[in-house]
Length: 205
Image (cartoon, rainbow, N blue to C red; front, side):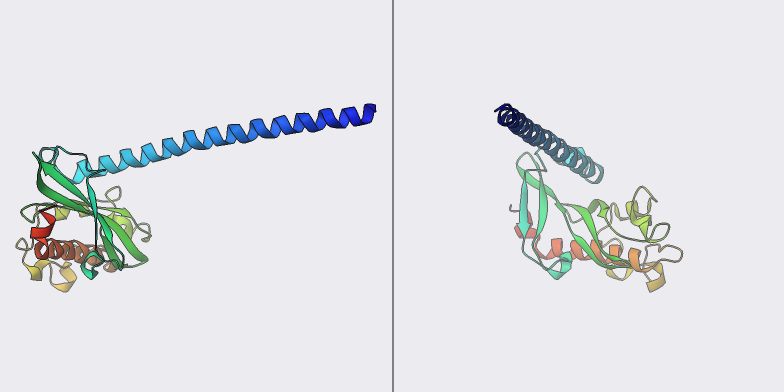
């Protein structure tokens, strides 16, 4: 009898321990999940503020979004997200979550901000797998090269100038690495072309 009583006590203790542990894990997961989501949101807002002047919008860019249909100009065979900047209720610019295909080690995820006049206000590579010390110079943490797109448009430079200097364009390439900057230049140019072709629709969101 004492043996069975001991087994019951141990089983009960283990059961209570399991319930408490499961509860603790669930609470920790929820708290951690919220922290991760908040960190991602903060990073996103920070990136938006870097590429789009604060005086161009007064809305919440993280919530004012739309999904564009797949288009080769945006580098994806799936729809991509845009963030719509508004000032006093009117569209003042668009931030594209565009993709630069055919980097040296694959695609590069980018943000390209274009104001209502078709001028790039800023751009960032937010994810890539490029070679450290070479292609990773597209990352602002590694060099200021990505800043060269600010204030550029389809007229500045001309379409012929939208390439790296090795190809006769206006943009620098990296020593020992031309494929990656070429992909990024092409992506920014193609995003501008997309904006120009769909300007009326984009500004009517």
